Image 1: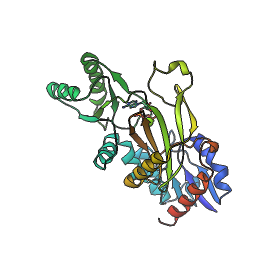
Image 2: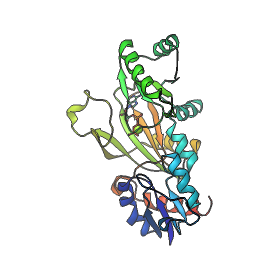
Image 3: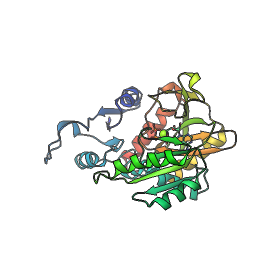
Image 4: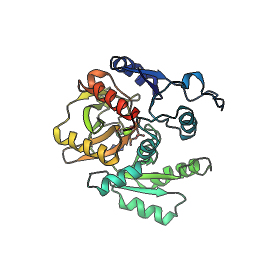
Length: 291
Ligand SMILES: Nc1ncnc2c1ncn2[C@@H]1O[C@H](COP(=O)(O)OP(=O)(O)OP(=O)(O)O)[C@@H](O)[C@H]1O
Ligand SMILES: [Mg+2]
């Protein structure tokens, strides 16, 4: 049996284990964080006999060590994980290739006051301020006036002033109003299903705007019109991310790509197309053979 090291949310591991086992892949969960890993010539027991990894760890330092022990190919590797973490880079690539993305300015700190206000004035109010690196919804705010904008930027500066903070950039971005919020999954270039994030309490509609699962939103199975499936497949091919969740905001005028995730959680099987796990198992097999 093909042995798969799973380095992702435990919930995702629990969901994928049995369906993959039915398809000849033995998934083994590996804890990466909050532990000691002795550097030695011998692989620790739990790193032995692994053929392929899923997914390259989000923390690059720990990931580099695990990867050096395992010496296996990954569904998705370092390159895809680093790419999708950089929201500004993904938006730049998508924009250059004709996809609709929120109008965005990347701010690199330290920026002068004048230039900051220049940037502020280029994006319509209200605008979204968010970290450039994916953060699972943390630190994302909507502002509607220049004073609040500067106040938030002050806080970002305080945090980013620490030398240890590798990332000193953030994004200011057009707010896409009245949008449905979809997570569209594409495996090896093919659309395999999608969910819509909706507020758990429909009274929140119009009061809150961030639909983050595990906070105020739940993910329900969604039917995606074919043109949007095609857009998602094109995004996946362009970025060359083999297993990807693409976040799309859809309102009556636009289909806007908000971001991509190269370490997407897997929701319950029923929410996806019936061949979801066939496709995933096939991809894992292909990657293990050097695809
Ligand atoms: N420009 C925007 N216009 C409208 N809504 C937005 C915009 N940007 C973000 N949102 C809302 O805020 C949520 C979180 O933003 P985003 O997806 O950019 O952050 P994240 O840190 O990647 O969160 P996660 O990883 O949990 O998806 C989105 O799912 C969406 O509901
Ligand atoms: Mg998101």
